[in-house]
Image (tube, rainbow over all chains, first blue to last red; front, side):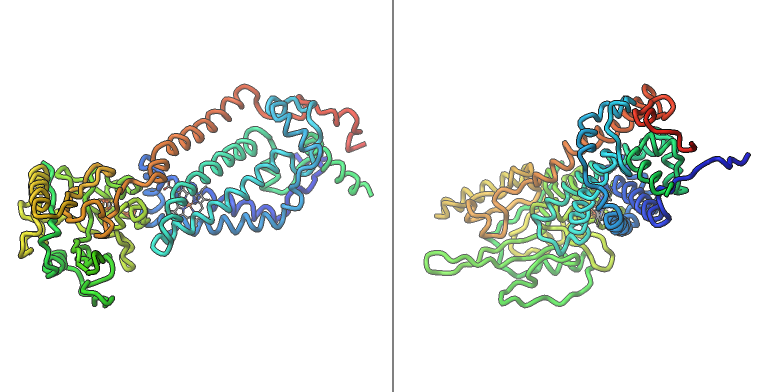
Amino acid sequence: MSEPEEIRIPRFDAYERVMHWMAALSFGYATLTGLAIWSPKLYWMGTMLGGGFHIRGTHPWSGVVFAVMIGVMFRRWAAGMGLDADDRVWLTRLHKYATHDHGALPPSGRFNAGQKMLFWSQVATTLALFATGVVLWFPESMPRPLRLASIALHPLAAIGSITSILVHIYMGTAAVPQSMRAMLRGYVVPEWARFHHPKWYRAWRASHRS
Amino acid sequence: MTVAKLIDTTLCIGCKACEVACQEWNDQEYTLGTFGGTYQTMPDLAHNFWNLIKFNEMERDGGTSWLMSKYQCMHCAEAGCLAACPAPGAIVARPNGTIDFVQDNCIGCGYCITGCPFDVPRLSPTTKKVYKCSLCSDRTAVGLEPACIKTCPTNCLTFGERDELVRIAEARSTELKADGFADAGVYNPQGVGGTNVLYVLKHASEPEQYGLPKDPQIPLSVSLWKGPMKWLGTLMFWGTILGTFVHFVIYGPQDPAKHGHPEKEDEPSERA
Ligand code: HEM
Ligand code: SF4
Ligand code: SF4
């Protein structure tokens, strides 16, 4: 069953894959423990993860791990996350993307404009979560106005962050077949690259032929 | 029946017997008081010090007078601590109006400290749980009055049915007015639906002079967070989960073979 013909284009190296999955794991843990504290109806998730008293201690640490991983991601990817002219047009045709009318879309580079927006929104919400999270972490040494602001802004940022990650998970699992393999095994096939990221594919082919 | 504690600040002589009774009954470890240049035992409440007699100094008409006050949990009808608490069963509103902290269920997040408009709950550095006056719920449950009230030598403190105490407090402030204290009145702030700790004050229009907030309320950010934001979050999460699912059912996955891209035509096959 070997497919000697299959050509593999490297998409994410080991560093990027580890960084992504560490962020995903710490985010998942922070989300479950955070939501347990957010609503009494979801408190059972905290009970399953060791009880309320335990998760009150661990949640902030998982948040710190996540924030550090976002920092690592920023160093690695931020330079390539700026929107170019094609991306700007792409964003105005988001509905075309959602309805599979790919012919109407300008070509994307290594990341499409949607992925870039996710990146920047995660950077923003993580900054907000970190700043407000530290205030909630040490209530007794923080001034009251800061605590009052943080108690509302931390879950607000979390709602934004979790919602965009839900979309991200949908894209990575069901909506775009084979993207999961890119993040797990690190490579994609040319057909996939040419369809989803034409400009990135062309660059690869140019360097590959030389 | 709602019970209450009435503090007639005009009768307090600052003997601090109630502080001792509170420490004794609740079996608090002994901590050295802090000397702050006043007669006060401590500058502030602590996780193991739930009842503080304050010697508030008021400068008026060229003289200084003491406005005694007793600082402890107010057992609010609409309690900010309870509104903020995320742990089921950690803060309990008893049928008699007592707001009781149940440390076994407390997760130590400190949200109640932020939710309380009177700045009462205190986190213990050793157990990482919060503590405050329980209105001696372990005494009132068996028909005894709270320890502070039992011990007060001047009848400054009274315990009983709330409506009855409100009547007594009103009568007492009428009496004070007749005695020349025109500003006398009852402290029973309506912003938190009234409190089950009532005060008779000589200067009722200036509760700040006694260290009491003028118009305490559950903070706006706490109400927003526990109200509209809960709905927003629920809507966003379920909306996204349902929305992506419906999207998949309608459109299915992106497929390079079916959803051709212009690139596909003008690119030669990569194997060519
Ligand atoms: C970035 C570092 C973070 C820190 C330092 C932090 C810290 C905290 C703290 C101290 C609390 C109070 C309860 C507790 O201690 O468990 C809290 C609550 C919460 N956290 Fe975080 N957190 C962080 C990141 C996150 C992330 C990534 C999420 C998920 C997207 C999240 C979601 C929540 C939620 C939903 C709550 C409950 C808020 C509420 O009670 O309504 N946090 N966080
Ligand atoms: S005074 Fe503070 S701790 Fe006491 S019941 Fe009111 S909100 Fe809760
Ligand atoms: S510290 Fe304890 S009592 Fe206070 S809000 Fe958190 S869980 Fe509730």
